[in-house]
Length: 336
Image 1 (cartoon, one colour):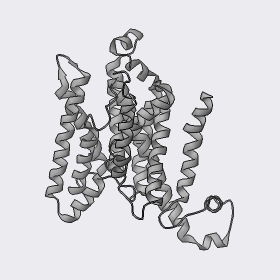
Image 2 (spheres, rainbow, N blue to C red; image 1 turned 180 degrees about the horizontal axis):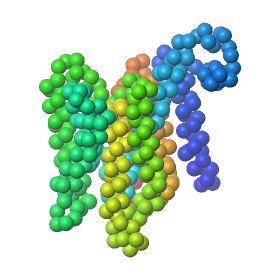
Image 3 (tube, rainbow, N blue to C red; image 1 turned 90 degrees about the horizontal axis):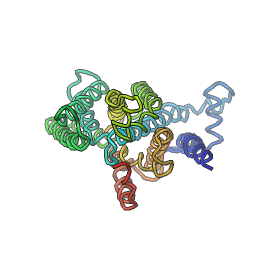
Image 4 (cartoon, rainbow, N blue to C red; image 1 turned 60 degrees about the vertical axis):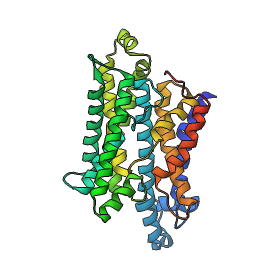
């Protein structure tokens, strides 16, 4: 029964949702049969003059919807995985990429690059995301060690500082750049393109691969540093690697689509509620459920609403009641 649940939720459901997402759009819906024909035409398996004549639909499918679906799934998987890793490392269920300042630092770096194009948005987001984590670690470092509570509190302060700096950039921007920055900070997927997919797929794929390879060590870290040392694992090095990876994939996600609030906090809880706290499974669950959940939200906003609500606003509207529900169910009592 457990294997069936894993296969359905982690493999079949994401694949089905991925295909259905290609049929959904604000301008034109496509049936599954026609989508299959278009796919065969795209790969040269069939030749149909009628399908070839309708070039606009091919453009919508392969140049607009496909990169958006791919980017949405990658960003959802990245944020959920980052949140799950940080919660396991710090053994605290309220930690997420925002808590340590990664998202706020990356958001400031990306906005700075948009306002002063000295370097690329992705590079600037990554650099300031790393700086935010570094500052969090330095502030919380005391007595030759760093406490979990101290690092979380320091991260909240550093996150607030970068949020204030981001607000200052918005205040100093001209109206055109201000509009672009504000729309970006609310999170958006309507600007998805193949170039954004190409920029994000490398660091996110590498980061997720490292997390998958280190998933069993997350179980050791969640037990505590002394237990990990007793087994022969150096917790300090593992933590540095995984925090660096979490920073990389979060920065790449933020640079691609902007700030998406609460996502990296809620999805790991959902994964643990379904599959339990074992990171050997929950790491895969965060990738699958995170990508699928964000894709589902994006499909809903595209199909139901007459206009697109920024994805960051939508996840906050959906995520806040869900998070309150999880708290009421005492789902927060996990290795605290």
